[in-house]
Amino acid sequence: MHFSVTEENYIKAIFHLQQEDGTVSTNELAAVLATRPASVTDMLKKLKTKKLLSYEKYKGVRLTAEGKRLALAVVRKHRLWEYFLVHTLQFGWDEVHEVAEELEHITSRKLVDKLDVFLGYPKFDPHGDPIPDSQGKMQQQQQVNLIDLPPGTAAEVSAVGSQSTELLELLRHKSIGIGTRLEVKKKFGFDHSIEIKIKGQTAFIISQQLAQALFVKLI
Amino acid sequence: MHFSVTEENYIKAIFHLQQEDGTVSTNELAAVLATRPASVTDMLKKLKTKKLLSYEKYKGVRLTAEGKRLALAVVRKHRLWEYFLVHTLQFGWDEVHEVAEELEHITSRKLVDKLDVFLGYPKFDPHGDPIPDSQGKMQQQQQVNLIDLPPGTAAEVSAVGSQSTELLELLRHKSIGIGTRLEVKKKFGFDHSIEIKIKGQTAFIISQQLAQALFVKLI
DNA sequence: AAAATTATTTAGATTTGCCTAAAAATAAAT
DNA sequence: ATTTATTTTTAGGCAAATCTAAATAATTTT
Image (cartoon, rainbow over all chains, first blue to last red; front, top):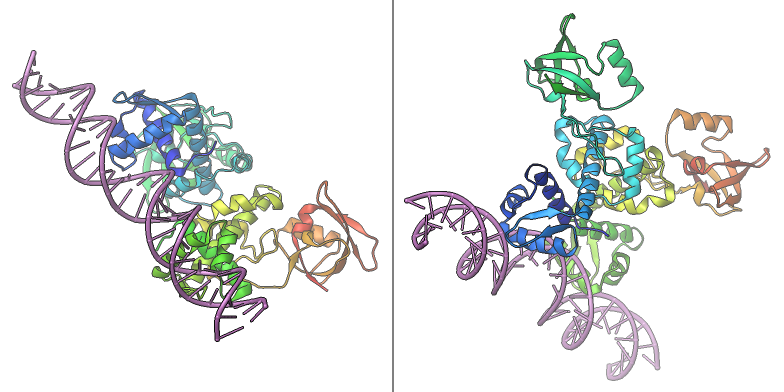
């Protein structure tokens, strides 16, 4: 079965809203999708006949198992493409969202899976959000990308964004690993580099690329 | 200015038909786009108001300079993506067309240019068609991908599809270079390998990947 | 040059996704 | 427990891109 870009966007929006809410209202959806409640109602009726969601008048909406599968497939594509844009094409992590919004609707299953292989099965996108695998499973960890922390925050490294030997070599050299505790001292807007301090060492600066590859838990 | 996928497809189709014809007819377009002549007429009127083509009732159609620029931008994207799919993601060269038909409509200019850099500014796509550069210029050479030649054809190597050191090393080892004359002896469907003969050497087999990287002129 | 054929355009409908305005249902407030 | 406010749905329409059927122009044939 194959769905339109619009339909996919509705399913994705419901999926994200459902995370917090459980059930999702017409108005919430209209706000997120920048459209009108009346339009949402129309689309919900349509998506119900396609069995992507369960919906009763005035009762809000929930994805079916089928709808969840579709949502996860779209999210997987979005986050894999974001990873590609940042790590392969050297985009800044803050400029990839819109492009990924388009790329996530490319239909080829084979493309996604080959992209996944090429990228080395990354587990987190450049914003630290988990990337669903081809079965739709994702490691949900309470973690944040190091680059998103404000100065003064203390955190513990909990994951790295890729398993490339280059990254691991660099981390070894800087003696950063899973479990390392650090504090963000300063952020430099010019090249998005970050000054961090690890207990017992003098503070030092790490690049934007490295900071994006590090996921941390707040402590 | 920004155009719909449908509009871009019309412009691209006209561009390709125009190469042979000069001016393009409504029926030709309908055939190529798998739609009806009446629909074509509607769209031509619309594209005329957008100044992408010049069109007089019953007189056929031609792209304006503006239309040509758009067509070249779309062709550029299509061919760069094909190159990416084959060389980076290891798709077979014969399975990339449909996917590229979708990818070519992704709008980000920055994406295309960064992709071009990443791929090393390739000049020809996996089918041997020239890739327009960011100015819309392309090396138009009368060349064909070696993999497309039928057995019995004689040809001269005129270009290689990439400048990677691995490719060049392999070519050196097989003593193939620009200007080498060869004849296709046999094609093996199983792995798309090809048996070729160079004067003064015994015939030997080259892989699908290598054949795809070689562009030849018929002699 | 008139008749016949083919190509193209017009006219009127359809589908998708959206809109506004008004009605109906639900929730909140008095 | 009514009234008031909010949310949601219905009703009727619009624009894009398509279609079929009919009309008109251009081309070919005789």
